[in-house]
Length: 171
Image (cartoon, rainbow, N blue to C red; front, side):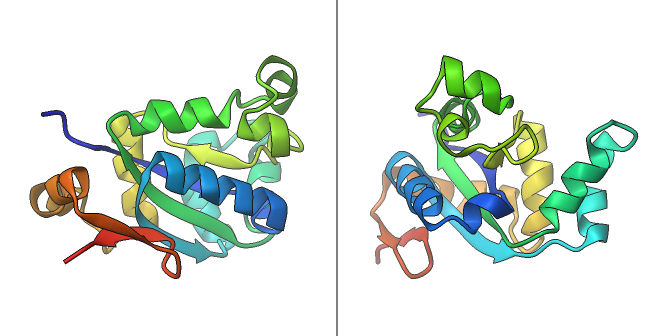
């Protein structure tokens, strides 16, 4: 049987500050994914610079790192048989303008404000997902989760803990 795939979802500051957008996004997450880990953080400039180092020198780098440090972000480790592709499909095109016209019911089409303030981030590959999860959840081992917990999350029983905003094992 196919294993669950993990991806990282980052809900950006403008969406975290918008209660309507955040409620909608959270409903999408808990209905479409197993939410393995969740936390809310506020990035400092150093953390944003390290996380977005691949974009150093690009025209949008300063705007992106400044925006990502402007308020709290929600971080979610999501599991699904095809987590990366599904989350990116739900997000829609990176370009909010394209999303609004080509896929108006995608998250970026509904709640995106610009190409930087485009609601959320989604890992683009399994390697990126693992690297990004390790960056934000250093205490979480993807290897250990696969070895000890993946089958339980895949087969159950699990329940959604609203207070933690994540799925947990039902004992």
